[in-house]
Length: 357
Image 1 (cartoon, one colour):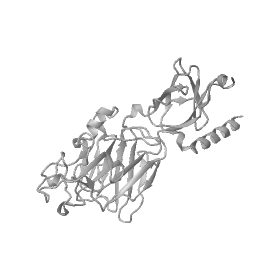
Image 2 (cartoon, helix red, strand yellow):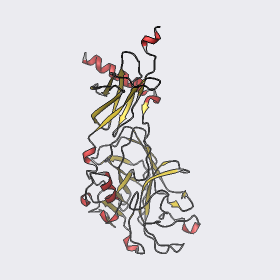
Image 3 (tube, helix red, strand yellow):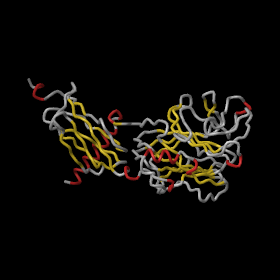
Image 4 (tube, one colour):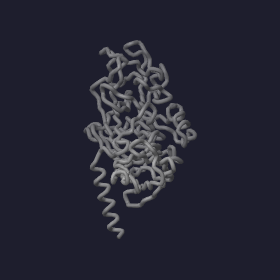
């Protein structure tokens, strides 16, 4: 009987995954500050690396682009450098740290791992970014090169009286314009929509070229990193970073292995309503949540059709179905990376009693 049940569950997963329109939250839309860089190493010879932490859970299909092309004050990317694109193949919880490392002399796809060293659930497009030892940046964004939405950025470059007569600083970074004299592979203006200290980080001291470092990483013991507001205040502040000019870069480490947002990463809730086609709540319907191993839990809807599951394991994919005496519902697949609300089911057939009249 158990083997039959397992086979049925496997077939159900395959059948539902084949219908892309039934997948909930195919991509998580990220905004400024939804990730933060945690480490940056450019002085390792032929190999560069960097790491970041998700400050918002992501679902299957979420795409993040990383580039070391600078941003021009004219509102466009400088061209000529690299871009690496990650697409998540499963839901990943907030607080997860991810590292990219790869050879930059012989271009190769980066190796992408979790802080534990296990492979990260992503696909990769583009070679590992080649980070300069005389200043560089990594910009993270969603969208296209022509129309990016910046999520976060790190800049480890300090210019003193650049061709425009400007020195680098947190407010505008290098204030890089589009004229050829300023079109430097090492420099960048602050990307639109980001603010140093809040959603991005610039490492350096204005007017001091000796404050430019090749390597840096966040210090885990800087303060409370288990709540989002506190973590953001700490991780975007360069005083909470170790810096080094040479490699081995001790005390710089990448990834940091910090317990980011640890208390909220284990289990979450899933909730929503069960409704008729005209928006009325259906009472006493049974909503069933089943994981890929065939283990199920159920919840009965209230008089207004509301249901809720607590203690749902994050980072997994589930089949959700609804049983009702009067209505039929199409099962769906849900990737649970963080708390989900508004997972509503609408009846897709008429009430049996009415249809027989």
